Structures are given as C-alpha cells and as structure tokens.
Image 1 (spheres, rainbow, N blue to C red):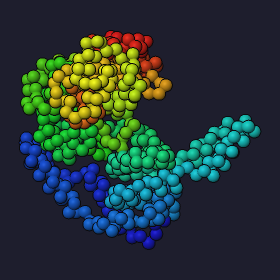
Image 2 (cartoon, rainbow, N blue to C red):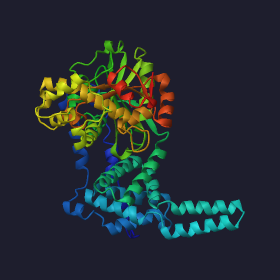
Image 3 (spheres, one colour):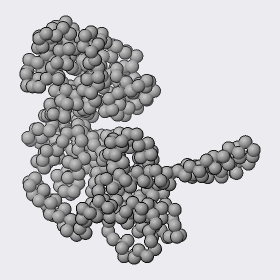
Length: 526
C-alpha cells in the first residue's frame, strides 16, 4: 500500500506517456510547405529530442527493479481499486496517474510481472462470488419478492466482476487514459502469444477489449491524413502499417500523394494518433497487384482523380491493442461515403487484400497422401498438369511437383515455372477462400476473407503475382484477392453470409467459379 507519507508533489507531475500522446505544440508552419523526407525526419528527431531532454533519467538498475517494487505496485493498485482511506476523486486520479507513469517507464519484463499480478490477484473474489451465488439461488427458490431477487442479482453481478475493471475505469478517466489502455492491452497480447496457457491474462485482455469497445462509441473522429499532417501522425502510419511495410519517408509521401488517400479514426483524447487507418488508391480499373500501387513514381494527377472510376482499399491497419475491436468495418463505410461525396465519378469500391494464411494451409494440405494421390476436389486439366510436371523431373503427380517447386529457391525468377504454376496456384487459392472453413462453422478460414465477406463484400477475383514482396511470397505465394463492395447488395450479402455462409460473387473469375462447383449451395452469384 502507498504510504500516506508520500509527498503530494511526488504524485503531481506530467506522465511521460501523456507526453507521447501530446507532443510539444507547434504553430504548424513547419509542415505548411512540402517537405523532403530528410527534413521531416530531422524535424521529428528534433521534436523527439526535446521530449527526451525534459524527461528524468532512468538508469538500468531502476528499470530492472521496476522503479517501484512489485509490492508497492500491488499496494497502489489496491488503494485505487478499493478507494482506501476514503480518498476523493482528485487523489484517486493522482494515484492512478502515478501508477500509469511507473508502468510506462519500467521494462518489458517488469510489465509482464505487473500484468500477471493484476490478472491473478485482482480478478473476481472467489469466496464473495460463491456466497452471493448461494444467496441468489436461495432467494429464487424461497422468495417471490422480485425486488429482493433483483438486489441479490446485482450483488452477484458485482462480485463476479473482476476487481481490475475498476482500475481500467479510473485510467480511462485520465487525459490520454484510453490510449494508455490500448497500449497496455498490446502488452497483454504480446505476452499471450508467448504463453497461450495463461488463462488469467487472456481473461483480463478480453475484459479490457470489451471495455474499449464500449468506451470508443461516440468518441471517434474521421480525418483524412495528408503529407501536411503532423509529423507525429505520419510516423505512426509507418509504425502501425502491418500489411505493406513502409520503407522510407518518400514511400509515405508517395502513398499520400495525388491519386491516393489515407483516412483514419482518431480518439478525441489522442487527436494525433490514429487508432485505425486505411490506404486508398484511385484507379481506372480494379487493381490486380499491389506493386503498381506502391511503386508508381507519379501517381494519378489531381486532374486524373476526377476521371478515376475505382477506389481500391489496399491496406487496413489498427493499433495492436485494438485487436478484436471491429473498427475496420465502420471505417470502410465512412470512407466510402466521403469518397462518393468528393468524387462522384468513383462508383467501384474494391479491396486488394492479402491471403495471410494460404501458404500455411497449403503446407498442411500437401500431406504424404496428397502428394501420392492428388485430391479430386481440385480440378486440374491435363495440359496444366503436364506443363507443371515438365518443370520437375522424377515426380509423377502435380501435387508433388508443386511442393518441390515452392520448397526450392529461385522459382520466382524462372518465367516458365511461373507460367506453369499460375493456373494451379490460382485454383488452390480459390478453393481455399471458398471451401476451407473454420471448424464446423460456415465462416471462411482466412481471416481477411471472413472480415470482408461478413461486412457484405463480394468475392471478386484471385490475383496471381498480386504481391511479389518477400512477405507476400512467404504468406501466400504472391496471391492477393479483390473483395468488391457493391453498395446496393451489402446488407443482403452480410445477412446471407452470417446466416449460412453464403458467399456473394462479382466478376467472372473462372477459378472461383470452378471452386464454387464443389459446394454450389454456398455461392450466390450477382
């Protein structure tokens, strides 16, 4: 427990975390003119240096000891949760801010120790919950007084609520507290990935996710991000981009140039840090590869934007701590409305999406039995089969030839091999999207496919060599997919997919059509 002797001025300070959410204010003149990437980097480095020089020096020894030992952290948490000593709102806020400041400064290992302590020692009180449950059940069996039953039900609900939810509530009341909790949940998820058996931490992470979902309603502002946006905001685009890595400031400038758009949802307490954002390319046709979007030196001119017909959503990203919070769906719909108002000529809204689990699924699908006798649900014509077999000597099945090629080095630089693989890989990709499901449910196994189909999009086309980067080849052999948001069918598509897994189609991709033939009852061609 925090000693009452702690001087008040030791608690009254500006948390280093809040400084991250609100960097030193400028008048904006530094960004009013087009800047070269080196100048933007220098500006940000100077701004970051000013923040660092005003921050107290923390030694390695202090970091290792957690600045405040775990026992004192436990006592401070207890003080905040149980409102000990009848502290008022001001003192509770100061205690909470102090705890957040300590958490922000300690190292990653000390954070894990704190989170594990919080999830185990400040969960629901088992004894009180059992007693409340017994009283409630006795009341239901013996009493007909609805008021008494309602009172006992409320008491049971309170005792089943983990104690750490009160701490989350207190943190959320602080300036910048919402953003702090998003980053804290990112730490939880990182540890869960290392130890998936930590059920207490998983339960706390899920509880915080539901809190974030509730708090986020009505607090988001949609903003367009441009090259003239604050450098802090632009840097976050590179930091949180998880689909197509940002290589340089010139790369960012190109993605924010003519013929390109970037929109984000911002929480009102952290107005310069996007919680989720989407990159958009304005084109004359539905794009089949991301290289043309990312590597185009001079994107569509401002005049050309007024003649563009398609808006291609090629990357959607959110902060790690918001994993599981469905913001992408609302962001896409809001951005579609903005683009329709700004550019009436744009009437096609389509994605260019990755297939992140395709290669992992394919490796599992290519079993020894499959290599010896290819499954019949994948229809490969004789010419395609013989062409692929000609690329690999001493094998007798197209599945064995495929595995030999994708496990070898240099296959992407041999054009004849690429030509032989295209129909085979596209057929497998279409089968994966259409017919591979999650367990016994009708939802698509691929998480990106499930996201867009659930949002009401149509499966449009599987693209060969859609992403030829190292990441794209490693995840999906370079395949990408278009999901088409046909505006007047979104609600029907969503209802049909959620009800029975019906997948709506647009376009005339022959590989998707062939995959649908295996399960015609789950397709709905537009």
